[in-house]
Length: 316
Image (cartoon, rainbow, N blue to C red):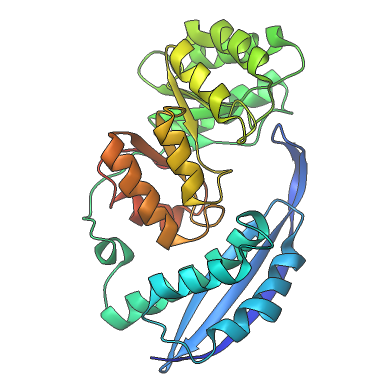
């Protein structure tokens, strides 16, 4: 089943209202589609960005990855992932390289599913089961009434959990917003907080303790992903979960977090993490360590991946 062709398409999509995610204002999203053709079948994969880097990902796919893929056996998914990673790791062991390889990897798994006539979760060794989902929004910029309206909408849809952004300039503002949300949702709905890497270690400890009375299920990405020791301090110091994963781009990064007990919920994203193939390895690491798993983005893929996890906690 040799790969006969690879083509790409680029889309730039306005998000409507500009949104603050804690690490910058999002006004557009980019979508890079990859199509692989092999043995009469067409596999589709994609990568996304939050407004920057999409053209660079497309260039990597067309100029660097395409020549490495043409004529190769499409069923050798693990081997092709390693081939692409080794070819480009000198210029980037993550980031744009991970996004580009992810788009190809997803397309290869699409081809594999079509050829086998099986859904992805079965190819991954998982089984069909219900995975709870929580409501989530990019809402740090929203005034409190709009934030509460968003959460009320999630409750009306029946979500058993909700997530909001934290990281406002004034800690008292964060506290008031989290308190209002907890009051609205009551004690039977899980509350997750996402700082989007906005804080220093000192700020995360102070604010994490300030918000503990509202019983969050987890605090997500409180620090820059490079600060593994800082995350370990938070795990040891705060009375709730620390969740990381969406900003990690290599299996080795997850290995370090898990090995240093710097996270208690492992979040997967098959685009930012480099594809379905490395996410499989990440889930195996989490399973071996007895850690819960959750997801970020790419719900149509993440649902299948979490069905292959031993301790799926939530789908975002």
